[in-house]
Amino acid sequence: MQHSEAGGMKILTVVGARPNFMKVAPIIAAVDKHNGRLVAGSPDRAGSQAETIRHILVHTGQHYDELMSGSFFNDLNLPKPDIHLGVGSGSHAAQTAEIMRKFEEVLIAEKPDVVVVVGDVNSTIACALVAAKISFDSDGSRPVIAHVEAGLRSFDRSMPEEVNRILTDHVSDLLFVTEESGLQNLRNEGVSADKIHFVGNTMIDSLLHFKEKAEASTILEKLALAREAGKNGGANSGSRYALLTLHRPSNVDNRDVFRNIIAGLEELATDCPIVFPVHPRTRQRIREFGFEFNLGGSAKKQNGNAPGSGNWRDGILLTDPLGYLDFLCLMKHAALVVTDSGGIQEETTILGIPCVTVRENTERPVTIERGTNTIAGTKSDAIRDAIRRQLGRNKDSGVPKNWDGRAGARIIDILVRSHYEKASYRPSLVPNAVPHEVRSSCS
Ligand code: UD1
Image (tube, protein in one colour):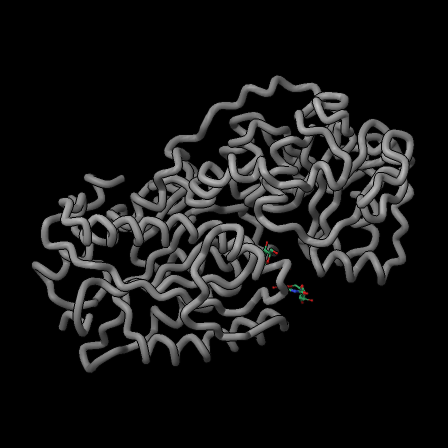
């Protein structure tokens, strides 16, 4: 039974947490483009029988603050979610279970042809797992599950995200991969080759699309920072600066680990001020641990208490979480980025900004191969050495394969083709029905 009631394929896309929003924006833009082409009567790349795609955006509410969620919808021109599950925070089990319970009701009501999940957050695995086990009719039909950013592996199962990645990949029918390592990891795990498509990186699609717009951000002027990366005072005579983000429980929930990381930044802080947009979890720990951030401070020397700059504390400036465009602008002009985020390792690769990752591993090895990123671990000395090395390195990095701004379009092409190919020879929603030719023509 072809289960769309009327019209073309129905795609339901899930977002939940901050790093999801920039990954879905290019997919939604590609849906709009596909539909626009059909309305204009131009032939569609995916085949003459293509119809308008019906798209539903579901927000689980895993992140709910304006600064962690709302502002991203404005910055990325995302449509308002059609359905908001309002799940909020909780333990991993409570949060995942609540998303599953509410998402099941949505699937039963909407009966989409495809569920798209992105990345590795709890919302990703929760919704993929529901879609894998749902049954729309007596034939046991269910939606095709498409995982965007599949195949990444840190090989560290103590990371909740690693568990989410592995499980999501193994219940998905279409695996959209961002880098070569993803292809290899999935092959090694025995995933059938016809499910895997090396489409590129939708987060990088967003970065390339919004890079120029981010230049209009006034965040650098507000913080009296230089607009030219790596220079001691750019045209606006602000300060050269570094950018810091930390939010992994393994880094910030343990007082000693957190303190070691901060101690590893002391030398950097005497060289240039460090801007630190603080995640809510990290903010809470800073309060609990009574940290003061006396790093020794160039910020005071160079900026004084820069007007409008908030609370500079001797070389480090703590700010609220920033919106997408402000953060992109800060990243683009930073002399160096220190982070424990996954996505920022990739964004700095494309921007050619040196990045020091304060983790023991990365699931994104292409960022290391390109030389923009280095893994420092969390010991003070190693962090200090990695910062010295990265500040001294040659900035020419090169672009990873398929990080060309077209990943969203490739994904929609593949979904459209697989939907109509499947309907023509095997009219059911049962998975694993994506013909091999689809893979070879699109990957
Ligand atoms: C989640 C993802 C992580 C991602 C990160 C980006 C999982 C397992 N982790 O981690 O991969 O890198 O998002 O931020 O899915 N909070 C707020 N406001 C919000 C959201 C959260 O105050 O809008 C606070 C709450 O106290 C909450 C804590 O932050 O308990 C952590 O939020 P949670 O969604 O559990 O995980 P993250 O640490 O944000």
